[in-house]
Image (tube, rainbow, N blue to C red; front, side):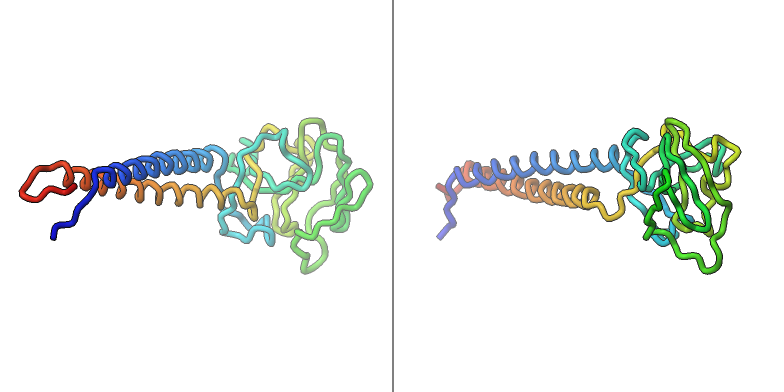
Length: 219
């Protein structure tokens, strides 16, 4: 006995496949666009240990300097520092802040700053002491590995070591769920495209078999 198929079966599978295919394309394209335009990544160097171990890839959200807050780890680049290459450092002072670093203790506007992210010094604190007022529109930055960070402390002759907020290229987002969610959306979108394509092929073949005349008719 020959298997019978109703014409609506192929049509239904074809419709479902088309919907899944369209949804998958939109989801995958949207996630890919968001990842490419909103995020990048950079390889951490020793200056940001232990927050970011050297050699690890750090996701960076593309933001401008107006979004930066004290305590953020930012990616920035200056033509006259570090060979123009982008680096990660932590913002400890913004325009108008009075930043003092003495004996390994950081204070901003006279208030001690808790820094659980700083790598403990094996010996006495390394690096020059700092006592600066950050000019408007600029930032004072330090590495979390104070004993191995070529940060604002070593450029005090250049605007008190500060960096313009316009040099910011992004903000480190390690631990943020957003990049992971976008990555999962991309994967899900691809799976929907594959599943939808299969359904479209099956639906077309089913309809073709139903409508093709022959010694046995499917009804």
